[in-house]
Image (cartoon, rainbow, N blue to C red; front, side):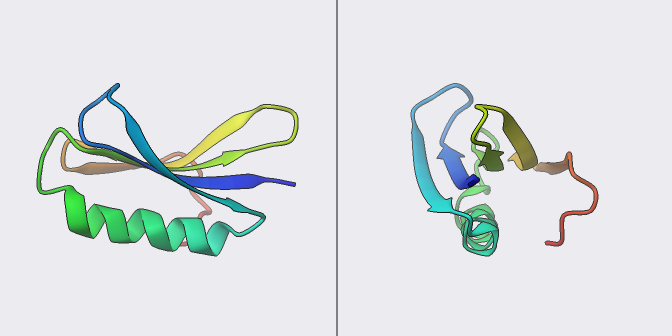
Length: 78
C-alpha cells in the first residue's frame, strides 16, 4: 500500500496542510494541481505531491517552490 499526499506549506519549513489518500495517486495529484492554482501567487508557498511507501520511504514526485515546479519522477503524468 502506498499513501499519496498533497502537502501545502505557506512558508518553507512552516506548518503543513496535508491531504492523504491510500493507493489513489490521481486524487492526490489533482489536489496538488488545485493547490498550485490557488496558493502559489505567494513565492513563499511550497506545494508537494509525495508517495509514502510501506517501508517508510518517501518519494517526492513533484514539488512547487518559488514560482517553479521540480519533477523528480519524469514519467509522472500531470
